[in-house]
Each structure stands twice: as C-alpha cells, then as structure tokens.
Image 1 (cartoon, helix red, strand yellow):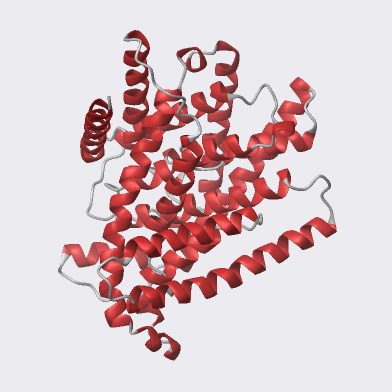
Image 2: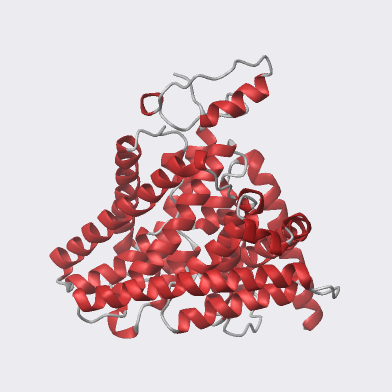
Length: 423
C-alpha cells in the first residue's frame, strides 16, 4: 500500500510539473489542470473502492504553508526603487478599492435577498473578494516584466489587505473607535516584529556555516508567521517585508548600517535561498490544488442553486476591476483578466468561525467562483499576444513625456520605456 501511495504522489507531481511547463505555451492556468487532475483521481478511487482516509484536515496546513511561500516568492522578485513607487501606489489602489466595493456590495445583496445580518455578510464576502497570488503570480510568468511586477504587487497586497479586513470583521463583535485603535496597534506591533525578525533572519542566513541552513530559516519564518497569527496579528506583513528586504539588498546599500550584513556575501546566499523557495513553492502549491481537486464533490461543482450567484459575483469582480483600471489610467489588456480566486479564498472560507457561516456562501459557491475566474483569466491570457519584448502597461494618457537619450539598441529602448514611456 505504501509503495502505491509513493508511486501515485510522485506521478501526480511530475504531471503537475509538466502542467507548469506547458502553461507558458498553452496559456491554460496550471491550477485548472491540477483541480481537474485531483478530481479525476477522486473518481478513480471512488469507482475502484480504494480505502482513502479523510484528507480534509491537511488542506488548511498545505494552504497556510503555500500562502507563506507564494507571498515570499513574489516579494523576493520585486524591485524597490523610486521608479517603482507609482506602480506600487496604483497596484495598492487596484488591490484595495475593487475588493472593498465588492465586499460591501455582496454583503448588501446577502442582506437584501436572504436577510443575512450585514456584518455576517461582510465576513462571508471577503473570501470571494481577494485575488489569489497563488494563481495570479504563476500565471503571468510569460507576460512582460512590468505586467509581472504589477500583478505580484497587486495580488500580494490583495492577500495581505484581505486577511487584515477578514480578521478585523470576524474578530470584533462591535466595530468602533476602540476596535480601530486596537487594530492599528496590531499593525504597528507586526511591523516592529517584522523589522526585528527580518534583521535577525538575514544575519543568520549570512552567518550559519553548517551545510544545512535554509531549512532552519524557512522553519523560523513559518514559526514566526504562525505565532503572530495566533495573536491575531497581520502576519503576512512579516513575510512581505522579509522577502522585500532580501530581494532589494542592492537598493539598501545607500544605508551604512546595511554593511554589517555584508551585502555582497549575503546576496550569494539570497540567490540560493530563492532557488529553494521556488522549488518548495511549486511542491506545496501543486499538492494543495491536487488535494483540493480531490476533495471536490461532483454535486458541489454542478450545484444549480449557486451557479447564478457565482456568475453574478464573477461578473462583478471583472466589471469593478475594469472600472478601476480605467480610473487609474492603466492599460486594460492583459491586467483586467488577472483576478483569480483560489488558495487565499479557500483558506479564509475555512477560517470562518462556526457561528458566522451562512448557508448561501458554501463550498459549491467557492468552487464555482474559483473556476469561473480562472477560466476568464485563461481565455484572456490566450487572447493577449505580446507584440514587443516589453509592453508598457501604463496608458499613454497617464504618463508624461520625459527627455531621454535615444539608443539604437531595440532591447534597451524597450526596457527604458517601462520607466520613461513616450507618448
């Protein structure tokens, strides 16, 4: 039996690896293929009467570790410099405003049609309003660099802001000035913890000479995240800041105190650390979506009572997104399509306190919205064709022409146009 399990898991992960490689060519998000593969394995096990234990408890564990790794992977790749501030601001607005509007709109709809108390409606709407970085970031690997950076910022911030809003709504019975003050204090505490922990972990990363060094660092990261979460602190902020610090050592060299970390030597370790994070992220993400696909019941997938709501919610997601992309004067294609729901949606849904769960927001609705948003992203990315090595995503009306030297190198000219686009 153990041999069969090992063979099955290895085969499924190799297939998942093939899905990841082929997604750049087919533009089909690997998450859809993983869910379908997991669901197919479930049909086989059910029809062959194999005895499989209940794997549901493993889902939140894989999801939590996966979320940590995915946010860290994205933040390690993000460059922080003055030329990126406009992108960070616009991605923050696009992460926040459609989410808030969708949450309040869906809460109102639940109250109007089902008599759900507005606060309960808010708590149940948040999981459906958060972009999943677990799906968004891997799905845009073949897009131009500036699009990838924007999606990384936006989806990571959406995860963090979504978790902050979710904790604020679900953990406070009454919302007032006292709860807002307590919430603000929690944010300040986690920023302080993040700063101290980031410095300590970076120092250890550079100082540990034993041949095993990256696994203890990863375990400490997960430990700090989990302990912070137990105290209801916004622990994803720590993951984001840790990744940004390690990924931007060159930008931090202007500060004298960074010399204590020997940035030249630390950079070499960070490169190796990134490789480990990439490998682990693929493994955990694949296992999570395979398991989630395996746990999907066909009746939940085909639930006719929720499909109309799932379609309406999906339409609302992309309509609000298109409006705010226009407000921010960004280019619609391909950003408008990249708003998938996924890992964070499932985690928040599973984290709803028992007394705050409502019948309408159930597993069927969650699954249908995840699949519909992934399909919209799939067809949108299939439609999008990259015409140049780098396509500015900022709309030409939104930028000011800057004086720059003209180069005869087309690649250099394209790269410079990201920060200095010419109308």
